Image 1: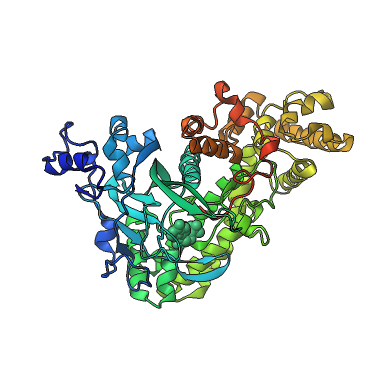
Image 2: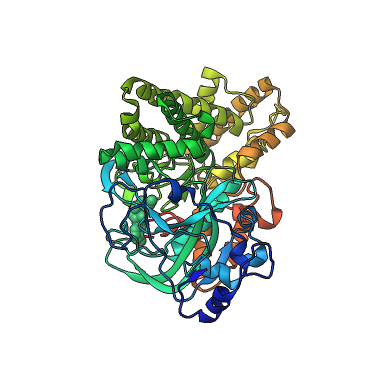
Length: 556
Ligand code: AMP
Ligand code: MG
């Protein structure tokens, strides 16, 4: 291993003088990781390895080492992801694990590099962006035989850091760590998070860009995904007119991540574009299902694999509101508001279509795929809506009406989206003779101010519920079966914004227990877990307008 850190010379010495045998349990904990760096091997590197900010042409990445930090301390790790990667819990608890995932020590076979990409930010072409604070360490084979890229976020400057410092603060790292894992266990495609370490160093951030900079604890998350390629990677080559490298990258992506589509050809490029559109539509349907708002859905934050990527000022819907955006930077235009995500995804896919156009040289089929996206998304979303209501299928106009009315019901008064859908499964559809009050009873918990519901509001809600009962009866699904079906898509637990903020507040006091507990709860988001009932509670009043709970900035 190559090691950087001065404070850890004792550890370093034992490691550098030892003979490594990956099968020998007495070797250092992390040596069983075997790297196979396909991305680096097959794609062009920036010949310049100097860590100086600059424009990089004709390369997919630049070799750059993580910057060593003062005092790595493990805060949390994902045991199931570690297991998938062949890392044992005892390895995760080792000093070496914290050192490696703080960037202080490189393992044999790692080839650290920052990726070069561009992107459209808030609708405008921003030129070269790149991994300004992310460093890929290398690819390891997981126990399913798939290569997984390990990436440190917040490990120091790269040639792509532009005017920023390459670092990340504990606050945003807790949010990324917890949300990646919560998302995965919700069954939603996402990059994962293996570890969260603090660096022992301070990082200065002006959280709301209002001239009040503060020193916050620095932290690093190790993210894991088959690939961190984004739409912006393809856009940048196109913007340089570098069609050779564009083709190299697209062919690479298809060969290794879409190999079922066959050898690259014009037809394959179109099939690939179509599948990226499909995966993106699936992803957004999931987000809409659980009330997730990405918050900065720029093309550089849109994964080519259809994964949720780059957890920044994201948020979870508490009271249902399609116009809500968690991102204060987005407060005026609300481009990235909850209800706008399907359209924004299409806009981003249009940019991908533009980027790969030179390889296809034919507008019509690309245009057709983009047009089809609307129907594709709508079909998928309607199917999901049926699932959320526990129906066998979505029946055209009749169910459209039912869902339109549901939207209105959800906006009558502040209604907690997660609790509403979860508790809707407890409204009996087998009993036709329920009083309004009994009918409504399971849903009352979802209202932020139940006493403020007027008589008419209640009447409207009951009318909708009686329509819903009829529809379910027509479907012929028993209450029991319907509940089981609904509870598989309507989670009990989501990573509510105020919960993360509480975990962050405690972490700032050196208490990581809530991070661990939330990680545990979010492991089984569809299960009741009575001992954790309080984590299913709607947003408390104090969190309504609190920074971190309802307002987030890109400063992270
Ligand atoms: P984002 O939209 O937050 O994913 O980031 C947009 C661009 O800014 C990406 O190229 C990031 O790598 C870069 N960036 C964000 N924060 C930092 C930072 N603290 N240091 C260096 N680059 C950063
Ligand atoms: Mg980003």
